[in-house]
Image 1 (cartoon, chains in turn red, green):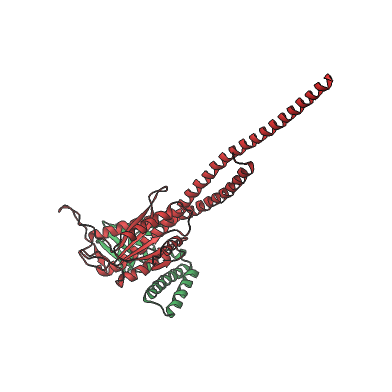
Image 2 (spheres, rainbow over the protein chains, first blue to last red):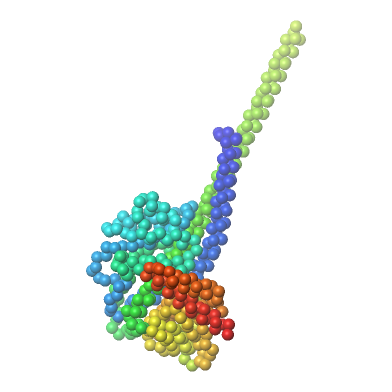
Length: 302
Length: 137
């Protein structure tokens, strides 16, 4: 059994670590509340935007546009926007995202231009000597629309110039309040849904695009991209705090469990030490008495 | 009088969800008005001023709107925009600062991309400032 002092110093160090994890838990839980408000405020926009765009695409007349998918064209210039956290200690959050990004890079046949949001992503790719095209700094902590505009403008600019012809975004999507999944979504070009089989007698509304289909798509699609990136940033912000909160809660619980075990161990060791001391005192006294009695007996005899 | 269902969603909140009589929005080539039983349409919106009248002969309500689009189908309109603010919500000082920042940036040499961003920022700031003036009057 380990010595008393050793156990005591371990208990102390675990207590100190527990204080830190507990503080981090409280911080991320308050931050998460803030993030949750932002998330709830944007969720209708984020999802309505996607469904409305999908609906527009279904009803759009046959047209070719720079932003739309062209059939049978091999796309070689690929861009990837990766949204990671700024700091670690958030469970598997960053690993999940970076694993997905790494898999994407491994599977890509061509060079992939990387756009990275978040400090950890930057560190990961620099450590592996993977060149980063654009590094957006400090955008994870407080997502706002200006940041999203900046990012989407940067990407759209290259897309318009023909430097990119396919853009993906990898971010963490909230499944529900407990679960989040890393997701890879193709932003550009926009996929046209396959023509659905609609019975001939069903009325199909036909939209007029104002001012003209080309001009309308010209403004609506960049707007959609910005909205999507903003939504992705907000979701990432929420999930990173959620992940950190869960991780820190688990760490605090583990520390509690360890402390309980160590307390028991410490008490046992203490008890053992006391027992040993008592035994030593008793046996010592006994030996002394035996010696005295033996001496007395011999004296009487003499 | 006939009304139509209007839903206005911005990136920060659901701005309005309910019946509406007339909606006037800044389209790319000028203002467009939407009333009940409007033709199916998708209208691209540029930063500008939006007007809504909830009832016939009712009061006009004004708001500053950013970029977005409006989809009209089956007597329902859905307006999605990155930013919509009522005149009383616009922070005049912030709008003025944003305008000055944009003007300053315009004077400096910048890339085409930066130029577009600055121009858009300036348009937004101008609209918001215009709305605050309406509120003060």
